[in-house]
Each structure stands twice: as C-alpha cells, then as structure tokens.
Amino acid sequence: MFAESLSRSDRRLHKVQLRVLLLAASGILITALLAGMASVLPFYRAAHQNIANITQISVEARAQALHNQLSRYQDMARQFTSRTEIRRRLASYAEGKTDLPTLQNYTLPRLQDAMSQAPNALGLVRFGPDNEEIVRLGKVPERITLSKSHNPGYPCQLHYLADGTLLVQSCAPILNDAGQKIGVDVVFFDASLLLSLFSHNSWLSDATIHLQDTQGLHQIIQQDGLFTMRPATTLPTPDADADNLLFSAPLDDGSWRLTLNIPATYFDDQIAGLLFWPTLVILTLALGGALLVALGMHPLLQRLSRQSSQLRESEQQLRQAASVFRFAREAIMITDPDFNIIEVNPAFTDITGHSAVRLKGQSMRSLLAERDALEQKVDAVREELNSTGSWEGEVHYQRADGRNMVALQTISAVHHNDGKLVRYIHIFNDITEKQQAAEVIQHLALHDELTGLPNRVCLEQYLGRILAERDAASPMLAILFLDLDRFKEVNDTLGHQAGDELLKIVTSRLQASVRADDLLARLGGDEFILVLNPVHEADNAARVAAHIVQALAEPFHIHNTNTRIGVSIGIALCPHHGSTIDSLINAADSAMYQAKQGGRNTWRFAPRHVS
Image (cartoon, rainbow, N blue to C red):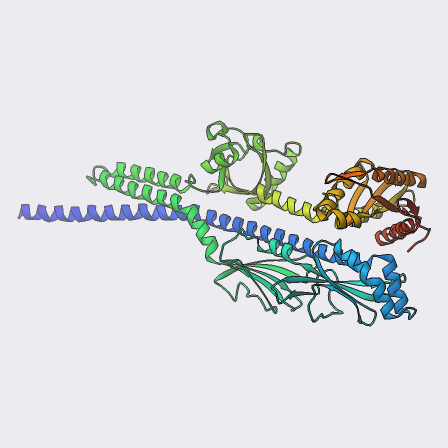
C-alpha cells in the first residue's frame, strides 16, 4: 500500500512538475511574443510611414517635372505670338485694313521659319479674330477644338494621330497693342519628352500611373510599359479600393493630377523582408530560453528559488532580444538622452562607412555635416522630442570618406515605466540620390538644353524678382534683345548640327562679353536676352551692345569652314521703356526689328514709353 501510495504521489508530483513546466514554458513564449510585438509594431509603423513618405515625395517630384515640361510647351507656343510685325499684320486684318489672302501670303513663310527653329514643334494652326483659319503647318489633327474656358497655361488637348504619334496641343492668344485678343496660335508638339518623364518608373512593375485632366477631358495611363489615352474617369479612392494604395500630386495649376496606383501588398512585402531575420532571432532565443528553464526546473521543490532567478534572467534575455535590429535594412542608431551613441546596426556602418566600434560612446554631433547651426537645430529637435516623443525630418551626415549624405530620419524617445527618459532610437533612409535627381530635374526645367543658359522660365523668374525689389531710388537696368543675322543661312547650307555648334560658340563669346552678375538667357532658336543690372547710364548699355556686335562679327570656324554672321540688338531701359517683364521684352524686341531694318549687325534703343 505504501509503495502504491508513493507511486501515486510520484505520479501526482510528476504531473505537477509537468504542469508547472508547461506553464513556465508557455509563459516564456508568451512573454517573448509580447516583447517582440512591442518592438516590431513601432518599427513596422515607422517603416510603413517612411516608405509612404518617400513614395509621395517621388510622385510630387515627377508631377513637378511634368508641370515644367507642359509649361515649356506653352512658353514655346507664346513665342510664336511675340513676333511683332506678324502680329501687326494680323491686327490690321482684324481692323479690316488687310484681306485674308494678303495676310496668309505674308504670314505663312514667316511662321514656317519660326516653326523650323522651335524644338519639338511638329505643327501649327493660326486662327483669326473670328476663329477662322489663317495658316496650317506641319502635323496637325483633322479636327481642332478651341476651349474658351481652358487654362492657357496648359495644353488644350492631347491627340493621337493615325500613325501613332502623340501630340501636345498648346494654345496661345495673340493680342494687339491695346491688349485685345485678335487671334489664337495652336501649336502641336512632339510628346516624346513628356512621355519619357511620365514613363520613368522606379516603382513596382505592376504599378499604374495616371496623368489626368481634372476638367474631365482625358487622361494618359501607363501600365506594364504601355501608354493608353482615353476620356477621363474618376480614380478609385482608398476607401473604395482596399486592394490598392493611391499616391497623388497636383501639377502646379491644379488642372492636371498625377496619380500612382500601387497594390496594397507592396508595403507589407517590403516590411516583411525587413522583419524576417529579427523575428526569427527572437523566436529562436525564446525557444532556447524555454528549453533551458525546463532543464533547470528538476527537482521542483529544491530549485524553486533558482528557477525564479532563471525565469528573471530569461525574461531579461528576451527583452534584449526584442531590441535586435542587426538585420534591418534601414540604418538604426541608439543614443542616450545626451545623444551619445550606444549602438549602431550594420546597415548604419554600410551607409556611412563609420566603424561601429569607433562610434560607441561618441556624440552623434560629430557625424553631422551642418555644424555651423548645430546647437540651434539640436535644441529644436530636443524640444519636439520632449513635447511629442518623436521627431522626423532631413538630417545631413558626413560619411567616413568626407562626402555628405541626406537622410530622412525618425527619432523616437524610449522611457522607463516611471516615465524617465533612457534612450533615443534613430531610424533613417539615405535619400541623397533622390534629392540629387530632383535637383537635376529642376536644373533642366530652368535651363536651355543646348547651350546650358537660363531659359525663358528662369529669365521671367529672375526679372520678376528684381523688378519687385525696385523702388524710385533704384538704378536703371537694361534688357538687350539679341537676334542673330544670317543664322538660317548656316542651317540651310551646313546643316542643323553646324547650327547647334554655332549657337554654342556664340554663347561662349557672349558670356565672355558680359559681367559675371549679368544674366544671359536663350529664348529659343537664335534669340537671346541679356539683362544688365545695374546700369547707371544708357551709354553703358550701348557700349555693351557695340562690344557684342564686334565680338560676333569675327568669323566662326564651323566644320572646316569660316562662317560670318552678325547680330541685331534692341535695347530697353527700366523704367524709361517699361516696368514689367512683358513691356520691357516687347520694347527691346521692337528695337531689335528697327536694328534689322537699319541694315542689321547693329543696335537700336527702344523709343520711350513703349507698352
């Protein structure tokens, strides 16, 4: 009976030990899962937000590039309307002083010459004051619709021709000297450059990109490398389409919108790859800890105190395992409340080139590139961390090789249960290449592709800024409108490649003839604008013009041939000949035509008070 009772007691004890062992192992596994979730969830949210922010920035940069290209088309369309004598003949026709055939005979060859010098212009139709057709040139659609309500800053329509060519239609009103509309130029441009900006896809291969006219006219869709154009439809919203993520950015005037449609699984797939190894390490350590506790719990009564100690040690190990970040792709840095570095992950050393051993104990201030305003920026970051517990923004670091990098960084504060601050966790992504790409796109949007000079958009921004800063005490500034003489003969005899080479040499001579503070811009074709600021006497502008005439009178050696050209220059002074961008450029343009009529290869001042 005693033996039988002892056997039952042993069995009961064994069951109790097994139950305690299972409860202990279950508790360790649950603790590991909770600790892992406590670390993984904030990391998941931060990574999700960072990827979304980078994607949105990319969409906005693409929208800005498309907007700049559409604005270039419109600017080139307006150049056709700026030819003074053709505009005056149209005004005479509008007043009934000239008949239509005479106007057409005069306009056709001059617009042909203008279109031959306009890059990417494939066709042009000029309409008169009653929308009657005056001239039709090049590739144009059979049917052309003029919308009175259409924003003149963007194309009126997009057209597919029968041969598959996509045309961008830009409309520019023609105004007489009184500012009244007397006609419209409808210019059709090759859309290949627009499509190249539109189609460059750094996102998923199955992402869909929409360029949509919000007025409901039409949209272009790029999917799987193919373009389609169809009437605009309402894009799905995040609430209506749970399977996709939408990122959208308006083009500057708001009448067009760029939308990126990405599968909702895109972010989850990205983050899952980042979390795989940390999760595997946490689970492995949890299982190992449970096995060690199970081996250490025999006998139960004699080792109860030791088991409690081992459980506390296992819990501490699991908490440490929850902070494992060795396999994360983002650079992660842990600092104390004074921003002294405690630990960095391998991704941080790979990106910055700094050794993890050397960094430990150093202040993160030693890694920053912006050291002049360092203390002020650190104080601002610390203030936001104290108030909200997190901070996000751009930080400029210096790599180990001396090169600077731009990081999109998130800083999170970690506190004890009693609320005491113990450390900061810094997570960042290197966005240096994306920022440099955006700067390149911005430069291309504001500069001429052939000569590298500022283009019309850059010129108008510069003039708008300096004219807004002028007052009654400001000195004069001069606008010189330069039009090359006999440039078309070079194109016709030596070819367009020789013409391009000539424009580059002309640009070099012009840059050598002006001051470093003056602005030299190319409007297009063989037309240049020189802004002299300041000009204390009108004779100073005349001397510059005479120097330019002399510099361009020297022969040019192009394709083993000595070629001579000339230049006709019109000079307008502010405020004598106008105080706005349009009035000054128009005055200088009129003076340039007077110089051509006066024998070319010379210069003329504009008459006073030209509007």
